Amino acid sequence: MLFSLMGGRKTLAGSLIGGIAETQEMLDFCAEHRLGPDIEVISGEQLNEAYERVLASDVRYRFVLDASTIPAG
Image (cartoon, rainbow, N blue to C red):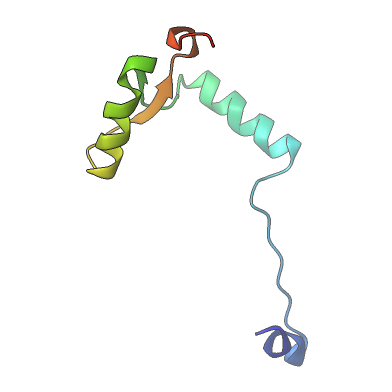
């Protein structure tokens, strides 16, 4: 594939994320319009259940683990 890009003066460019300015602009827009992610907060005790739900494609929102519920040690 590399050699096919080299002929004919083709250019390939991209970025997985925007720069700092673009990211800040997006965050400001989201804050101004009260936009945020849809999440489901789970406790440490629910971790295995959440994993099974992922495997079963039974997840509607992004899981967020409440780290304060994980036993120490």
